[in-house]
Length: 220
Ligand SMILES: *Cc1c(COP(=O)(O)O)cnc(C)c1O
Image (cartoon, rainbow, N blue to C red; front, side, top):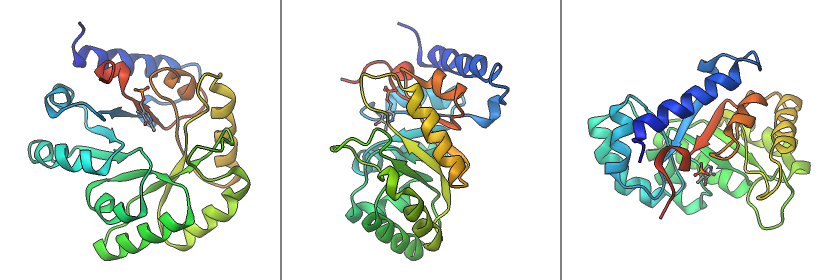
C-alpha cells in the first residue's frame, strides 16, 4: 500500500496539473485533507509530511482527536465540513478555523452569538443545495442572495460558497453553477470537489477541495 505522504504528493501533483490549463496558481487552491473517521495515528504522517489543513465532519470526533495533535502541530488548520447543529455552534467556534456548512438562519444566529461570546470571527462558507435535493442540507438557490445579505449583516466573514453535488451524476455542471452563483453574489471562495472529482473542480475554479479517500484510503 502507498504511504499517506506518497498519496499527498500525487493529489498535489494532480491539482497542479489541472491549474495549468485553467491558468490558475497552485497556491490559490487549498487542499483540505478530510480525516473524518481516521484515528490520530493515520493523520500524523500527513502532518509530518508538512500538510497543515484538515477537515472533519463531526464536532465531537474533532474534539476527541485534535487538541492532542494540535499541541504538537500548533499551526494545523481545522475545517468543519459537515452539517452543524445549532446547539454545537459554541464548540465549533472554539475548535474550528473555518466552517463550510452555514446554510440556514437558525444556525447563522447561533454562530453569530457564539462568535460574539468567543470574541473571534470564524470565516464561513455558505453551503448551497446546488442540486435542489429535498433531503440535502444547504441553502436553497432561490434564497441565496437574501441569506448572504443576512450573513453579511451578522458580520460573519464569508469565505465563499460550498456545495456537494448530487450523487451519481456528472459534477461539472454543478461546480460551474456554484461558480456562477459566487460571481453573481460577489463572493470569492469555492469549496467544491472531493476524491472523485477534485480535478474537475479545480478546472472550474475551486479554491478549496475536500479530499479524504484519495489521501487516507477507504473509510471503515
Ligand atoms: C467525507 C466528505 C468529503 C471527502 O470525501 P472523499 O470522497 O472521501 O474525498 C468531502 N466533503 C464532505 C462534505 C464530506 O463529508
